[in-house]
Length: 124
Image (cartoon, one colour):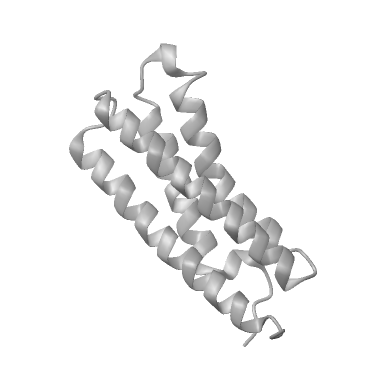
């Protein structure tokens, strides 16, 4: 059964959960981080499902693969921001661990999607 919309993709659904968690955790960051780490982490997290959605809506597999690659880069940015927030004690060890675990799930799903898309590409 073929997918009808990007919303049916497990990776998009899990990335949305990651966004929700990032937004909830950053609510407790210091007010002076509102335009810094808070905004950066939220933007990076939001970029992951946004790029999956945009790529799935493109007309070619190559374009979809490109957007999945961008989503992987944004996910690495999320993990970097979580690491910094953890080191600055803006996140407890448990909060950081939960975000890293969620990011790991999303990363595995993104890599699986990328492998699947590459398998669709014609061999040269």
